[in-house]
Image (tube, rainbow, N blue to C red; front, side, top):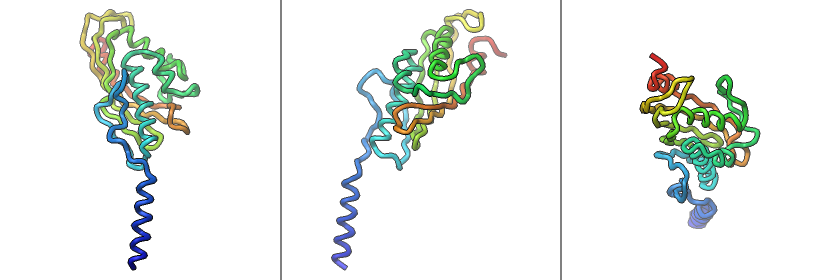
Length: 185
């Protein structure tokens, strides 16, 4: 009986010592990346994979926060596919860049808050809050500085190595945006 307990305890300690402990905080806080307000990570993910996936999300949403395409290039695969592509937007990696540029024409001071980030397997789910002021032009109308604040939800699928986003689905509260800038009742 004592030998069986010793063997079980030894195996348990060996199993625990080979698993990398999850870092207390997988969020990169060392530079200019957007920092999520809340991060929720699937307990089945290893610490390294969780940190890689959180980093990819930080890159993508830093792009949306700044408009700097360098972050976008580091976050999405060359084969990226938008599964909820709006009419007129190009498919592939060019699509988000075109969308950001067009939106920043209307709201030059646009920011993107990464309010919630859920990391589950090879999928990222994000709740976003976009803010700014309508001082530019949208659909031929010039803004007068109206405040803008609306929400969006993204689902991002990561490729095999979990370092690049290969496809996404997204929904933005466009009706709220249009109402705030005076283009919807």
